[in-house]
Image (cartoon, rainbow, N blue to C red):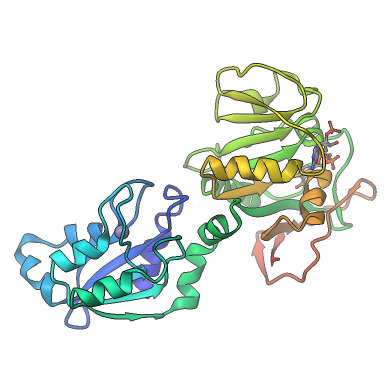
Length: 336
Ligand SMILES: NC(=O)c1ccc[n+]([C@@H]2O[C@H](COP(=O)([O-])OP(=O)(O)OC[C@H]3O[C@@H](n4cnc5c(N)ncnc54)[C@H](OP(=O)(O)O)[C@@H]3O)[C@@H](O)[C@H]2O)c1
Ligand SMILES: [Zn+2]
């Protein structure tokens, strides 16, 4: 199952909002006959990849093997046929999976189908470890909004930056790590002041992978069209109260900046099937997410530099779950 979980993680950059699933066909305890993972949204499921990977000379052993999966096999027609049918068709005698699927209409459905087909089923193996694969997707399904990751860097004296001045706090390794996170996430949002002060590109130029959808809150359309955020490297949404026609990769979303503005953006992202969002700053935007309890995880780089004055860093209202050393930065991870 540990191997299955590793396989599942390999789908991270491309499967959202589908789950990250790994599968392994094992013959007589320790012989791996086939393996696979769900690679790209809409493509073959892990179980299909595992069955297809078995060598022709060994295919007769499939009906004598155990199928390990990180998630209960699907039992409905989506972009692909149900994996419960694949298991029955190949006469796989036993299925062992880690977590139940929380997709409405699928939850707890596949076990009775498999049992009816004569398949022995065992589940809950390494459930806690495998659960991390499905955290973002489960949040997306349950709350009908993306999993929200707050991310920022703060100085030794707890400032996020200085008004009107671009200040770099974290080290180059942390910067590259952030680009990796971007490549694994559907969308990224910043406030107007951040776009004006830092002129960020918000893409993944330091890490291979696709750039996320960029979103900027700009009530009065104050950001110049020459800003990096409007370059052609990624699709961009501008949330504004003004009316403006879309232009190339830039979509202007006219929006009431009232009390429910964040909720409305989040439901639009849900409609667009974006299952994870990074809130990259600045302080005002991050604080508005925290005040509304609209966050799931925070990744905060505690850096070596001292600023003396500046914009106070947001305060994450829980204690960190862990601290990771990233060169000379301390990366603290918090869960709501
Ligand atoms: N250290 C880091 O990791 C990091 C990251 C990002 C930014 N920064 C720094 O942070 C500073 C900017 O932060 P900031 O707090 O001044 O500004 P900000 O959060 O970047 O932008 C604030 C503006 O964005 C709009 N906005 C934000 N939240 C909104 C909401 N919930 N609903 C509607 N509109 C919203 C508002 O624009 P309107 O006033 O037009 O309504 C608001 O005035 C810069 O100095 C930048 O360098 C640091
Ligand atoms: Zn399936």
